[in-house]
Image (cartoon, each protein chain N blue to C red):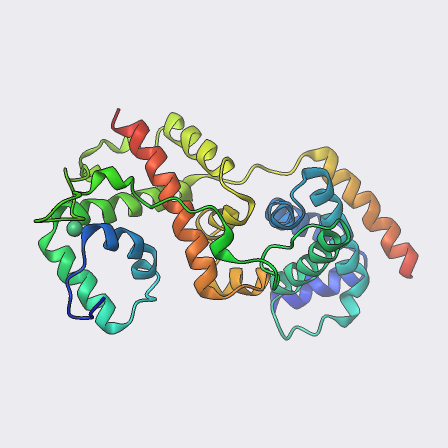
Length: 84
Length: 205
Ligand SMILES: [Zn+2]
């Protein structure tokens, strides 16, 4: 594919993470943004990905079960005495 | 600075310091171990082994990297060793290839035109989620769908949990997993795309 060739929507959606992570070359970024400026569909898609990241970010990891923690603390005591 | 206090406390055998460390990292550690060993019980075992390595190796911690990086590096070693012993192809090892992971297109190909003009452009535009009410985007039900989507991802795609739930940076994931930043990006992209598709089905039905 030639660098000067315009990006299709199908190609753009595969580059979204690289774009958000700042991993595109300057030319790649310019191409991405040029397409975006002209394409409402891709702007909406990018926004959907941003919402996705935000929603995933609201999840919290389940806390560790008390029993598992107790078991580790018990082991901790032994490890310490074992090396003391 | 503060980290050295924690290390000092651990060396003295301070249980509260150990407990808070466990609270902070245990879940992420099990998740990461799972990537390598593919079994919950074995993963928990690997994490236990890691904690032992951490506690008994504290004298060797020189503070040249963060405590977190150091802990996850030990975890990575333990997990790889265990995976190899159990005869698994270790993700991110020289035998593992990102391309061999199942690939789904980020967006269903039927969403794009098959013929010119405007080949590979949207047949109909994706919806603007900015117009959806915030209560719906962040509802408990939405979150349940997202959790389910993440749970259905392949072990290596759990990178999304480290990046987008735990808030790790790309370089942190790269160091903990021993993969290139490009590879962790590929995995992250596939995972996010999958979650977006799930959300689309739910939010737009
Ligand atoms: Zn487009």
